[in-house]
Image (tube, rainbow, N blue to C red; front, side, top):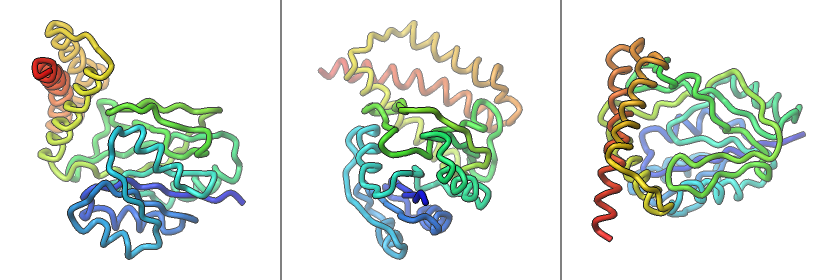
Length: 248
């Protein structure tokens, strides 16, 4: 029978890692790769039947690929520490890896800001490839939003991963700030040519697509904030990009 390894990346996740690991106790192997946590993350992880590795994240795609390579089983389920697996998804995963009709599967993400389930603006189902044969899948070695490459066909699971990544709007804004920095670094490293006009057009286009075409307005205040921060992301990335250029 096919066996499953769950791989979880952590960095200062003491508030959520226990729920994540509790939701996958049934897996054949659980691997945690910790990026220099300064809180009680590792202490909590050691209470579970996990293999713990320590590695400082350099480039996200490279870090994830390294983590998956530590799994001893053919099938890998990739989770972030603020995500949990439902009973319905567990059953689907077990059926999927036994049938092996595909080499990878994408899984819907049910994303929350605070206790609000964001259903519009492209936030749901927002399926991502999270279940795969480790030798048939890899990420590009990119600083932010790395692309996934699959050797074979990709199937689709119906049940959700529960993602409680933003306990409040402050955490959401911090994420936008952090990722816009990584985006600017990516542009610098790839020799991207960016102008203020292009960045402004992209910012306006992002707001229109998120708020109108993808119907973020149906999520009320949270929908507007998401669309606004999506616009801000583009402007911040450009401003940081120019600042980095000027420091060279």
